[in-house]
Length: 383
Image (cartoon, helix red, strand yellow):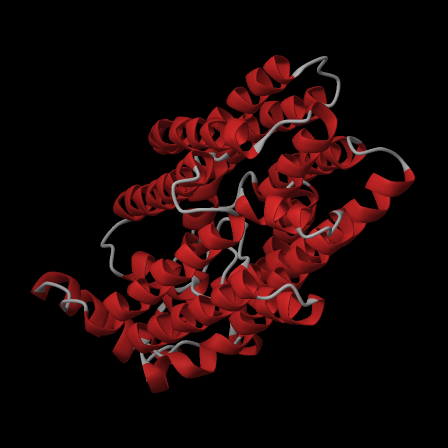
């Protein structure tokens, strides 16, 4: 919420906002692509702490500088990881969650909780921005840097897992060697998923929250004080919807849950551009928030269950990298479409592309089940 208003106050337009967002997504993509070789050397805790510390420094630089180069570099180093599940920590977090679970149902449950906590955190940030309790937009960005530094410290000195979790982690993370993508027996499946998720991320990059907030500001002259509470409410609506998604996943499967909750959400995105006033936009945003994130936990769980345990870091890293690369192009294309067509055109384009992604996902993976890991594969994955 704070970033578009901070740039606006300094005289920067839509182009600068989208360049910073694209830089952040490009940086996340590069970092995720380099993670896998360091997992066994450094450990999950060290990598999580280190990446979060770098994000803290980058965010502080973004808060303090008005220099274009510094702001773009800060975004590249992690100051603006504004899309869910596109950050340098994503493959680490997803692998730890999946390999700490003893069943697919437990995995789905914890991925749901993981995403609920993420959404609640985003909602809290929007709420604080709307209250303007920590000064102007740049002061609020500086406050985020302090929170990230505290999170880095917590990763570094936090308590060890309990004995059960530690035993699971020991077996799956230490004894099981993570294979590079070239040695994965399901690499064709991984590449297909990466391509589809990249398309979805590209469409998402056209309508990142900062872009939607800027569109509302330009089209309806909405202020930061108005939009902060609105996006807080949208985040809170998303939290219970993730629990509903978990129930739908158990009843109808991952792919059906992903597709048939996502399509109505995308249609609402298109209808937003036809709204006569902010009240109608708010109605469509509420419906979109209730439905639009139901696919997230199902997607995370699905991509982990359709590969072998020894392929999971490679799968998560490649897919997260593909999503980041797709999302990088989103803000840049958004600038062109915004200037050449209209401010609402990126939202329509995003809605159409997302509907196409849903239908292709249904056709390609509607009947795919998780692999039965055979003895050869299991032995190959042992260190």
